[in-house]
Image 1 (cartoon, one colour):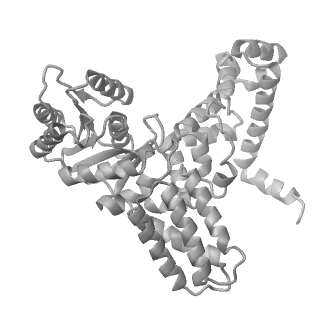
Image 2: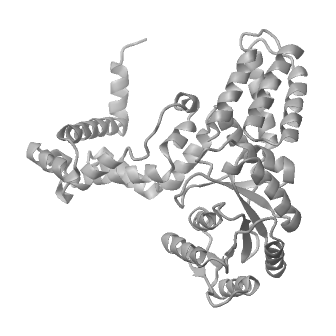
Image 3: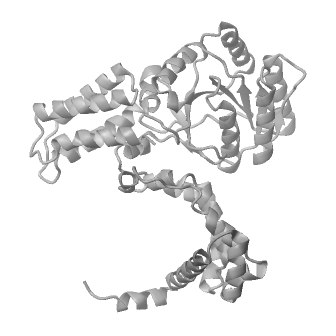
Length: 442
């Protein structure tokens, strides 16, 4: 996410490295590089110029303390200004009404229907809401099919009327069904449209007028950069949407949309999509995104993702098993599945301060767990529950069954045994204290 922009900003900061003070000359040189980096990221020209002018004024107005370098000071100012540029604070959904009506709009191919499913999943799992999806695309039967598949996948009902070609009537029918069945959120997935298509724009305006939505979310493909911002402006002039959603941030994203949209349309980014899975949706936090762009990581989001995937009761049960040395391959497999739900591995590593830069040229294979999963799945239920029972003949059978080399099976079992020993020690405070006492003094 934003690797090229982060790289170029890092190079721009090197202009100030080794400088004892901030001067008009070295700041101007740095701002020139930062403006180039922003324009390369497809940020709106006026936005990029106003941003660098603001940063320059603030940098020249600061006294550099002896404890920090000019580069560190500029990084702090950049972090504050990037945060402000992207909205300053997190914009929450307005969910005060019951039912809350959310209208989803966007261009063809922006990932609108996928986002609709992700939003329903987020509302259901994280906010404990009872959403209803409304399939309001009367032009593309496949869109209705897609929404019904997603609804089944996440356990959220979908209202569809395949006989009707009136999106206003379908939306109102969906709201009526939600009220009748006790759903407290209605998410209306409208047809993708082009801003130049006047008939389609008038149609969505009629849907808005009839349904009186509490939230109108405009879905933007982040990979389209400045074009996305221009389109958002046209849609906002017609719909006055309440927030934007950036999809496909896990792709080759330059960052222009994220950095420009707030300043151009004066509407906040509320969510970002970071993958295809239904869990790959994050609330947009400007301060955290600024930190990530500047290579400072985002530990808070990493912890939040972990908390979303790890159940407290399961964690307590697991802790008991570890203390009794009963942690087995079933538990190990379960932990792998939870880690995978957190997102792609490179994205997760990028949230750890300093690691993002180290990993920028490293390819991280999201299929890295496949061999481990195949080995565990080739074990019998008895072997999974009793790792110590896996002798050489069993290892040979597991190797053949999983299509892996015997050395891979041996390595996994050895690593599992070592991990189990460490986990057992860490769960025992007395053993940990004893281990610390034995460590050599520095």
